Image (cartoon, rainbow, N blue to C red; front, side):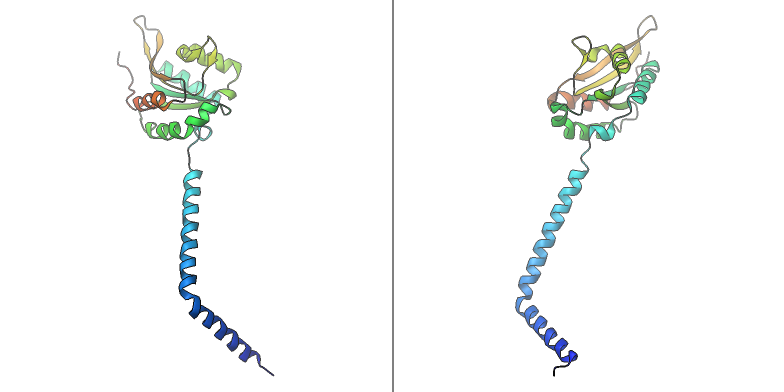
Length: 190
């Protein structure tokens, strides 16, 4: 009769023999699969941190109040309008939002991202009334839109809105210069 201790000894010798025979192959395979795992994790980590419009969007009521306050105090701001179902918005999202996050470091201006689908009719009309230059065909808003707004006063002291850059399409040649120019926005001195 073989005792349990002898069985363990036999298993140990079998495993040791297998290890000695295939050690290099097992180490190479382990290193390979560990490398693959690290690459997959890195790709998923980078992909998971892609900035989105939705992650940077402000509530429409809060956004409209910020716009109203900035215009009243003559503070410049950059506004990005998007729609979640807009193909051009999706196409431009990654590059536009990366540039937006860099430009947003400008402390002289506010930066707002608004989802036009969440604007109610009153907010929609108020936005067009306050910044009429962004409207197309009278009462429509194009998406994606990037606009640098510089409120100021005319000679009579009435608040007016000047546009210091406007892009209403997904072409990076159009929206990137607007976002890059937003870093230079300053309050106008009267």
